[in-house]
Image 1 (cartoon, rainbow, N blue to C red):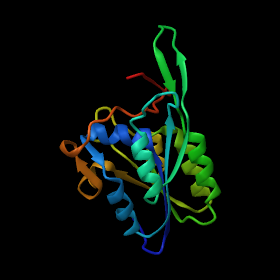
Image 2: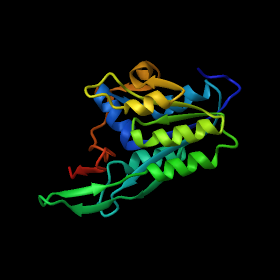
Image 3: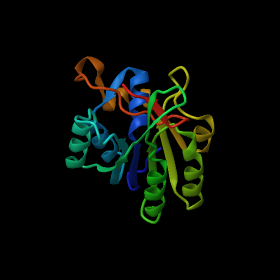
Length: 196
């Protein structure tokens, strides 16, 4: 599925990958993830996208963001937006789809193989656009969870589907080794999540 001569770029939808790995019962070791894809081809870039709640005194995602930024990832963030829903619950919206899509399209002249870590069906159009430019696109998510974490139309559009569960031994860290931390924002269909 990977040619060692290919120029590869990783595009990680942080909230989506976090939710997927949690559904499978393991955490991602981001150092191992980077090494794993460096062995598959020439890794040009590894992008990590996440929205941040800026007004919190402490953000549980901040240590990860800082580590990624210093260890080979290009971190792309934006402030999450807060609002109150009709039931009076505090909600946070943080969608990074546009940023990921624009960055991916801007690199289409130099990247041979895109690896998108997300199951979000909104990326089907991006995958199709990259394929029209002659680029190969692999999507990493899972069908092993109930419900599956990947939209069926995204899985069908991708050149390759890599089930995250098949990478567990290669890039995973046992949940027992995990430091305690709060749940990261989920970027689901309605693009909101409850405050924890």
